[in-house]
Length: 421
Image (cartoon, rainbow, N blue to C red; front, side):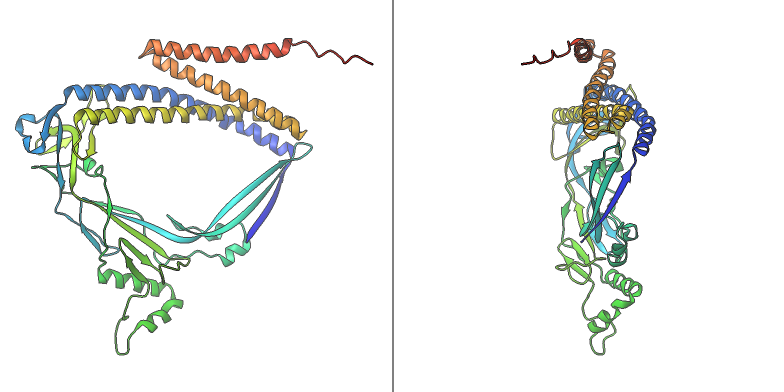
């Protein structure tokens, strides 16, 4: 079942919207430029901070080798992160001896998805046909069905939730590393979460069921049917089920209904780790470098200092490239928004509007890429003049190519008329 809406936007409305988008385009252009500049400086600052920290790092080996003589120094240490803490999720009565206890909640809901088809009309107008579809899915948060576009869907596809719960992570406050204590910023970085068989506390189970029946009067007959003759409580849970590391709230895990809730539990257990940090007394601190950066590293397993710093440099480079791409797309998107009125004006004739839109899109992409190279190059000139100079040369070539291409079009002689027979 689907629901369709058709909207028409006049030429003058589209033109007005395109002009109002110029301000957003300028904001995107500036934001992309600032991001590109900051990103290059941050890459170099992080690289220098890692190099500075690596030069200061003393290789201790196993945590058993640590002692007062290393206090205040940057150290690389390997050892076993351990805890005796029992972490308890009070809402579901689940306990586990672990470094971290994680709860992930999903809701079975009606979800609205859309498909749009836009067609330009003669005269510069635009017609958009939007089709709304409704599917049942597991989602990470409740969906407000009252906002569905289809009036019938708002009445017939009403979302409910048997219980309301959120994702949660509990951390142990007493994690030892040899004879020393790990600070929270390291504890939260320990990975390797694993599933475990849930053993739900009966009081929590009963409390959840009671809350469901209290909030849903139409489900009370289920409770009566489960009560044995002469018993004061249900003979077996009807709405709370356990399957491995999952607590399922609903009538049947095999046949989910709208409103059912699925709660998945995982835990992080004691494990071998390797860290780089400043040793201080009985714990560890982040390393503050001369350029204001902070450095602290934790890797799972026994990993050498060289490998840890190598991974840190690789991560720094990867994030720098990601942000370069993001910044470039922001610049290009900003330029396209700025020149959008041109394609709208040309769309009085739909084919002409498509051609102009494609042309301006190509030009904006080339200009945006060239501008991004210029910004990156100027930033690099402060740190690596040779690389920065080469990048500026490439950008200049792109700009020159655009200039001479446009000039060649202007100077091209008109086509000779065909000779008559």
